[in-house]
Image 1 (tube, rainbow, N blue to C red):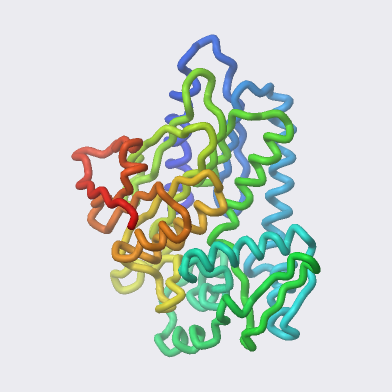
Image 2 (cartoon, one colour; image 1 turned 180 degrees about the horizontal axis):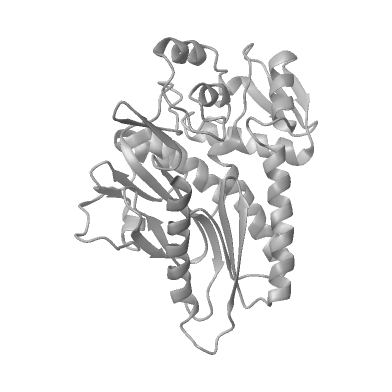
Length: 353
């Protein structure tokens, strides 16, 4: 059922993008290609690109995504599991320059978020049953959660030496990196880099509703839709300016229901349980990885702490939809948002401190 909902949303988003691309009947067409990666549909929309060039770029990006997926998969045998084992056993490991930079980036974002985005939360996510292709059936016990929380490493005890590309775990506790909280943003950013290296300056890379858009669709800018957290449709839409990323974290992405309650995969590292105060958080930022991590952190921060965390992470454009479909939004994003639901939602505009 979840896969069907994702597919429907992607098709609706495609329709919105098509409106932007068809402002001039004589304009070059938008090349589109779909890639199955990271458990979702990744759609490339490339403006003024031939079919042959688009097919080649699509193939290159697919290969890159598959390699990245294998390297950083959180529970299948591969380099990430080997890294976690080394850090847990010997307390250090040598990485490639690219891998070291990626881990360092995750730790920098974690620090900015006050630890709400937590890239070493893998053991807790596994406890909840989300390190599997199948959804869990019931939550873990309070005792198991508390025991796992007690074994989480302090992030300030994990460091990366940029000169030697070595990573050190000085916490004395096992480390289980799970980069799912920002991996989609990273791979979207890298896809945009590939496109720009090949002279494509007008494109969207959309991974199941999380995306980065550059340039425009001919004479008109790209216009994208934001999914309704409790329906199949589009909740709101906005226009992208030149180069921006839009990422949403929601309690509808991976979840199960048990005794009438919804349990999703966005785990609060403070309580060890799924964050439970909002339905979705949308972040707009120029960098996809930052937007992805911030959407996760702000979802966990919830309605009481999101402004402080957004400011600390350098995020000015935020929209929160609470469980009653009320919108909390920053003024920078409010002036650009168009709501597609009827009746319109209750909206509260909140400036950052």
